Length: 363
Image (cartoon, rainbow, N blue to C red; front, side, top):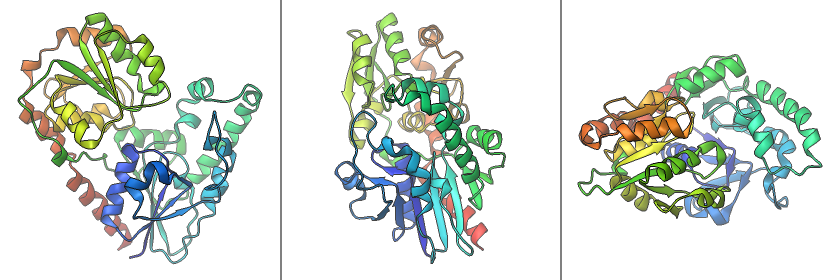
């Protein structure tokens, strides 16, 4: 079976790229189709992969928006990939990848991380925080409407859709007016983590340091309670977060997989303040046997078991998080039970579910 993979951008490494890695492991001869590939940043991950880029690949990128200056051309660029001769196109999409055009007999299955966030669920926040020059801002609302119309039509193109969570399945139905054909939660590679007996006295939060990750809630809570907090990851708001951090907050920047596994294994617990589509970092904490305190929305509701693998705070506020942290008793949780829950989302289970779904539809 000749397989093509479609991934919006290969410009930074995160949870979506881990899903792509898994697809590439299942079909090592597949060609990755992507709008833009940053070889300097991503070559160590995909230097040996077969990659096809769009006509935007060599277009100039300059501050403040970088390659996002060409946002208006993304629909046209994704539509111009040619998939004739392929048996299966497997896209993983949080925006444009689902919009590729295939023709019979090629089958297109799209793994949906989320309906495009800035078009449907956080449009106001996007327009307020995006690095858009003032001269362009008046034109953004009609442009967003144009992209929303394209995105709705593009969501009709895949033959089958897999949602990465029940949370996302609900949004697919709400925004795209179609039902997800399957729900397969993202995986955690449990083999990367072990349960350490050497607990340290810090709390941990991990992620891209962007506004929607709500790292500031964890920082303010640590400041208020005087507890040690380690913040892992980099992003455009790193300096702002450093400015509000008290003396008990430490920033590590981006870490290797091995280093991240170590900080998970040695923490008291993991703080997860954002509302995520699914959420892989809570699963990583649980794979290390560490409990999670998470905001009670999104995919976290599908992976965390209150009282067994962690707790929820109900309002996305500092006060709500502080109240849960005050009551937290680390001796209440059994590390082996926590890790057992993570194993329900292990990589091998994810791969089996994906293969079974595809084989069923292809046959």
